[in-house]
View 1 (cartoon, rainbow, N blue to C red):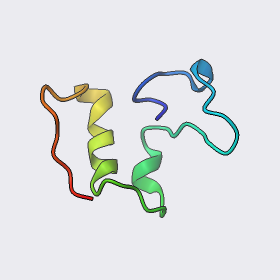
View 2 (cartoon, one colour; view 1 turned 180 degrees about the horizontal axis):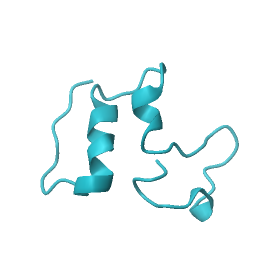
View 3 (tube, rainbow, N blue to C red; view 1 turned 90 degrees about the horizontal axis):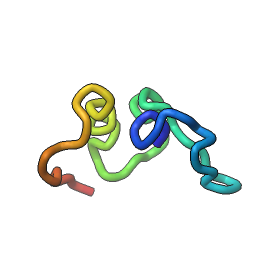
View 4 (cartoon, one colour; view 1 turned 120 degrees about the vertical axis):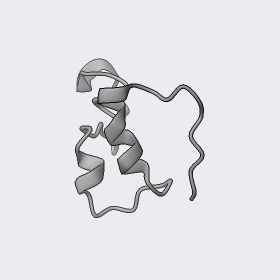
Length: 59
């Protein structure tokens, strides 16, 4: 996801039919995202960075 793994959408081309998301887009989408709670977890990454330990998720 753009904004999480990198700041530039052109840093990696995911290929046709795929695109980078901004950090805000997962929380705003009506698409089903898995795992459950992914938008909330993603939203914390820019400010907090990755967690020190793996995060257990459902779904």
